[in-house]
Image (tube, rainbow, N blue to C red; front, top):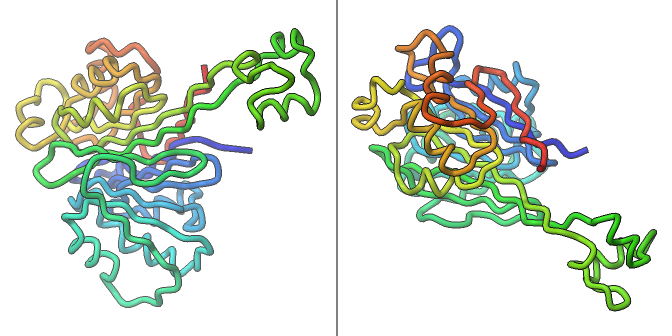
Length: 301
């Protein structure tokens, strides 16, 4: 049975708190697991969340600030310790190669698994699989940063009434799906487009073109909201978003489910992020993330 869900491992920004670990997010997409921004402590959070090294197929790092990448050393070593039997690919800004090298080989260990390095240097597709295309877009932060987006290919939904009208049943349904035509009846005559699902992961950034491009039409958007709206000047100065800015970007992009995360330790009331997001006009499903939360992708319309 396919599973598509976000497992939240950590939700703090630069400084962790007693209740919030540094960043870490696992996206389960059918049979694959994609780990985003493993900050310090991610390996332990994986244990608490029931996530194994064997669940990881890709690691995507947005940028090389410590709260988004210091966990790489432990995660990569755990992948090797557990002898993960499949390839693992790591995506990260190419300008930070020296940081990736230091983290990958931070200490001595036996390397048993080939982690494929796939640095990101420009906007565009990074990988294509039967289940999704992984894309990157440049963000606006003091160091080079990229957001990531998964797009499932569009499929087709068979329409039982039209199939019946054309006398197509049993094995012939599969045949017309495979071949596109059957006895003069085209696949388009008995089906409709089933839009592929879309997911985006947007971390440290000011508002920029990349934010809007990543969020466009997403079923699930995970986005930083480090600051509340009254601290917008600080957000701009340090290259971050406020709750209201993140919510307006999601509203304008038609996002179905918005997940806010990456909260500054200066704030004690997480509900204020939700209040400001709603005040900004976002009316879709909204989650203020906390550690070890699981968020399923919305069901298809």
